[in-house]
Every structure is written in structure tokens, then in C-alpha cells.
Image 1 (cartoon, rainbow, N blue to C red):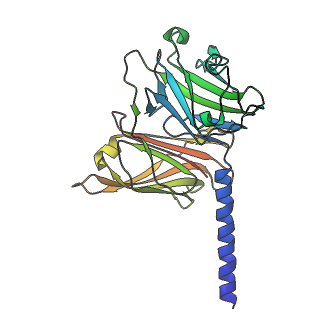
Image 2 (image 1 turned 120 degrees about the vertical axis):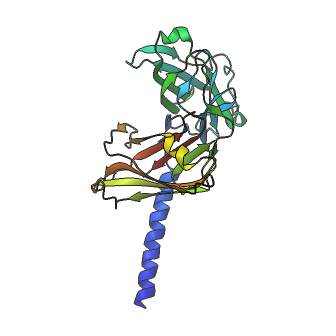
Image 3 (image 1 turned 180 degrees about the vertical axis):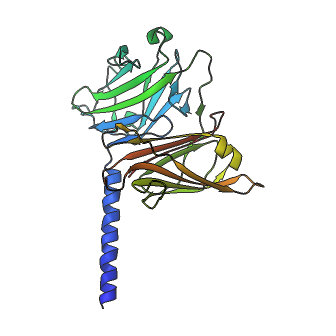
Amino acid sequence: MKTPLMSCKRLFTLMAAMLLFAQMSVAQKNGVLPLSGMKFFQEGIETGAIEIKIDGAQLLSNRLPLNKEIEIRLEQLNGFTLNNSKTMYAGAEVIVLSPRGEMLMNNPNVFLKSYSNGFYAKDLNTFSIKFGVGVDIMKGNYGGTLKVRLYDLKGKNQLRLEIPVSFAKPGELIPASRNAKNIKANMGVNGIINGLQAKDMLVHVDTTIRVSPKMAYTSMDISNIEGSSLSEIFSGKETFWVYDSELNEVKITDILLKKVKGAMENNTVNCTLKIPYRLKNNKKLYTVRYRWESPDRSQVIDVVVKN
């Protein structure tokens, strides 16, 4: 009877741990988006999805055009105060800071005219914040920080968005796509792929790496990548970022480890990544983002995981 009892106890412990992880993932209020690297802080106002679009196409990076409409599209918003007629009132502040922190643009409410009469619950299914940044505003700065704050005019709830951006030169083609899609992955992982296909992705924490034995690594196994080749995967540019629980960037000096397998006669590739992100004895929660892009920036793999 001891063996079944011990098995049940272990099963119960495993189920409890899985439930706790699921609750932590669902309750996530702050995070980082793939593709753009935008940080979001849900402070009473929450959304099911966030995308940055140009001409209806999703941006593939944090590079934005000048003198053109930029759209931040939000899905399934909630957290606004309803009045007696079931109407809600929102404001959207848009700020652009220079690399030195100087205020270049400050629009306290881009909705001042278009949403003066408020909106109804059905309007929150797909909600857009639209604005532009003029060449004259940037004053020779081709980078900086974009901050957007969606707030309740009748309450204290808000949603804050922040992204380091670079601005394109006039006439430059901005990488964007209508075909970017999610990568099938385990819970707590947000991966997007464009210009390629991948069967699935498995992410876990690896503490067995001997190259840097004091570090814990985020391990990403991306299987059956189609539309590229071994040489193309190796010639692409890859970067990773690590953020603490407050989404402050943490500088990591250890290098990313990578193993790529595939047959030369076809275009199917399997890729394993080991990303150093914390010391083994540090049990705090971190956000890890990995990005790979082809030389022409049309093919992208961008993954964000919290562990």
C-alpha cells in the first residue's frame, strides 16, 4: 500500500504546482510583447491582446514611421466605469521622449474629439488608439521612447504601454505583415512567427549547463521550422533580453547557446536555444525575450516567456 500512497502524494504535489503556475500565468498583469518589445502595465484596465499596426498590417519590430498614422489595437478591453446610461469614457495620452529624456511630444488625450460622447461595451471588443509622429516634432532625433496611457475619465483605472523605438527615414519600407501567427507552445509562453512555419515549441528551465554552471537557462526547443535552411538560420540576427519582475532590463554577460539540426536536402530545421537569465540560487521571476530575424527582416521568430 505504500507505493500507491506515495504515487498519489507525488501526483497531488505535481497537480498543485501546475495549478499554481496556471494561476500565476492567468493573473499576469504586466509583461512584454513579442515583435515590438512593448511593455504593458495593466493597472485596472485589462486587455486580451495588443498589436501595433501600420495600414492594417502588424509591425514586426519597434521601428516606426514618421508622418504616418500608427495604430495600437486592443482586444477585449475591460475595467472602465459605467454611468447610468451604460456609457464609458476613455482618454489616451501619447508621449514621445528623446533618447536623453526630453519631451518631444505630449498629447494628453487623442480621443478628445472622436470619443467626447463616450462609448459602449460593444466598442471594447476591438478598440484602437491612433496617432502620428511628425518629422518636425522629432527635431533630428531618430529614436526615443513612446509612452501610451489609456485611462478611465470617470475613475482611476489605466493601462500603460511603453516601448523604445527608432523612427524610419522618409520613404523607408517598414517591416510589417498580415500573416504573423502564434507558435504552439506550453503555458506561459507567447511566441510569434512570420514568413516561416513551426510545428511547436517547448520551453523549460535548464540548470544543467556546464558552460556557465552557476546560471539557470531558459531552454527553447522549436521543432520543424519550415521556409528556411540551416545556413539561413545561422546567418540571421538574434538577440535576447532579460527583465526583472518590474520589467527593468537586466544585463546578462553570459552568451546564448544554440544548436540547429536539419537535413541539407530539405528546408526543415529544428532549433534548440539556451538563454542565460539568472543565477541558479536566485528564485525570482524574470521575463525572457528572444528574437531571430532574417537578413532582410521579413522572417521573424520572437518569443517571450516568464519563468
